[in-house]
Image (tube, rainbow, N blue to C red; front, side, top):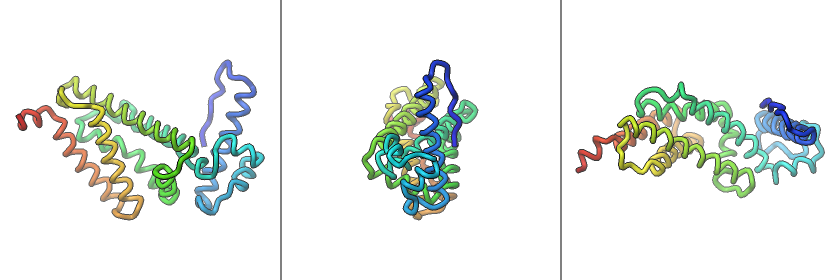
Length: 214
């Protein structure tokens, strides 16, 4: 599923460990996608990866943790694509909805499995769930950096709490994502709803909003 670069100075033992993890990740993603999360067993994943069952538990505590591990790496790449400089050109009300489009595209391709991921992210306690929560916080921080850049150009009010504003943007996305994945709305409606909510949020962030309220 990914190709890990062999870096200079990385020991043979570490490369061997990376190879096992990559095989495990690829096997898990393939079986989860083809059979579904519930129908897939740790034994099947280990056999597909050509690993002993016990080896799997060196990388994930259980099957749920393994799914979180698989999604963690995919979401990391998706976040990098979302935050590419070419994606960040234009006015903020246009940029912010585009920021989440790569995530919607990925979840659309794996909608059933994404429901399991969402449930586990919310309620499962495990090491990879903790890493995923940290990854979400890192993304929010990078949205905060985007807002800081826009503050410097006058598009965001100087007195705005940028961290809170970034967290609110991510929360609006989460609300729309959950609404779609749980069957409350269509993907098209979720995208439109997010764009409308973010447009309102941008109006609140703009310096003119502070002037109107003064």
